Image (cartoon, one colour):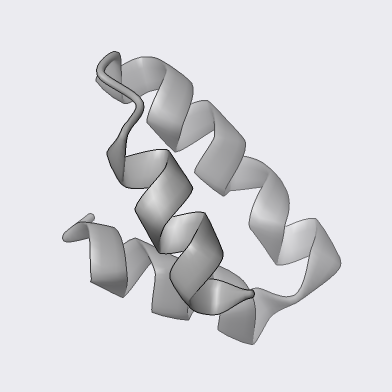
Length: 42
């Protein structure tokens, strides 16, 4: 799941949209959000 999110969000060209999608992840799983953010370099 983590790798899939990193892969898919890395394809989003507009940074504010990528960050908006990322901002929803802490509501689902805070650890997942941190890992995906790190994988995206945010």
